[in-house]
Length: 189
Figure 1 (cartoon, one colour):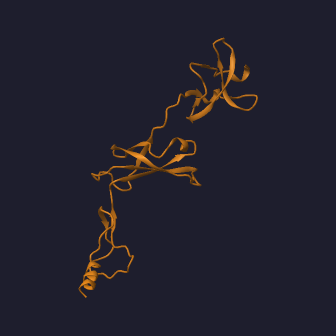
Figure 2 (figure 1 turned 180 degrees about the horizontal axis):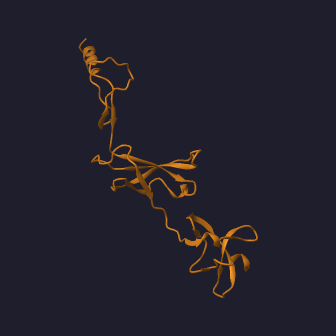
């Protein structure tokens, strides 16, 4: 009988399965509640999760375990580690979800705060060329025309890395090159 009474008494004390800060208590003392009903919202601020998205083009460059830097709207920065990269794209934006864990033992980062997540990927050599300098080869490949060491024009296949309003960043050009930016459609190899 004592054990049964003790078990009933233990039911009157409610303990959260996680440590944290009580965010909200939607019930009042003495109120009857049903099993499974929410009685409190507890937020565990450490670690904090930064959630973002990455484009189709960059998804392969973001890997679980990579370092990430989060810059918050108030100027504070924190470092973390990528712990999830999605495999299914959002149908509307064609972006993939990315998550990074960061330490927040001091509770300085509030839940729901906006931040920018920066993930440094392996560096590549790219060149900025005017968008108008891009041409197609006779086979349909995208490239630029350059003047080589013998002062002869030649086609160089490229891949677009990033684009801006008036220029594009491309790879495929080796070393120092003189890119033809005027009349490139009027010369051949």
